[in-house]
Length: 425
Image (cartoon, rainbow, N blue to C red; front, top):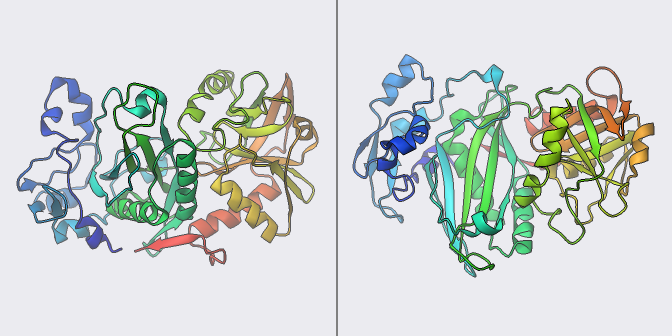
């Protein structure tokens, strides 16, 4: 979908983003970041957190939003001149991106009742949302999220990486959490619209990526323990750099053998929000001791590798790459799945099986994979006070080879023989 066509559907939601909220003292923090909306013809003002150059600022000051007839009440569209402006790169320090939230221009929202189907959603200005205190997601943790990335090519076009896989994983998680979910087509189209509406936030080639965060949550009010009566699907985005502060330098892990991330029969195999809160205690303790993150063991035998807090783990020995099998307690990572396919295409033998923690002692290399980290080399692992190191500088040879192939494919630098990328212009 072309950017003009996407932006022609933009509409502020006045119930969610009320103008009065930006003038009250209690909402001063929100006012710092969120643009102000008016229900009539509105002069466009760039969000205050942007550092726009004089030429762009002068151009933006005369852009207007016009009321038009639309399937949505109080719908509005941006003028063609603003649509073209939206493709300009945001004026931020692209060389200093970390992995943190940088508020962008638009988010996508779509709602559905319990037992119903999601219908056409809409783009709205990025900002706070309202939830009933009794919302299912707040009281009972009925929520899922996804994560994927968009990359800018040298020709200015944008590449998405396997968005349909995220859609399928969300649908599988929704079934486990008793939630309706968007169809694969609805999910992918919503991602496309959101990325194109925030195109100027996609980093220049080689400077990072646009992280895309789809959410599915029980937004309806429910007091007794039951599925929520209403659900909200929402997407927001943020430009990001490296996930770990070490960048692509080796990370240092500690094996946690008392606390556990997931249990058989639980929800460890789906991307539900509660899985991540459960790792914060061990992760915080590890970071306080100087480690990058935590590697978890299975909770039954307490000797088989499972995963890092938000990454899958791989162990290399010779030409064999081993990774824990997906068995209900480990998240089926999309980067994990992709690395397995890439490794096999490069001639490696990949084994998905139970991997005893003792194999770390004799490994040639260890690395992690995930949407946020892509591929992250492990420099050392500490287990019951014993530290094992892998190499001295940067990537091991295998991790480097796989990282290079995958990232070059994601960025459009090599032919996509896997048919994994979706190109937007």
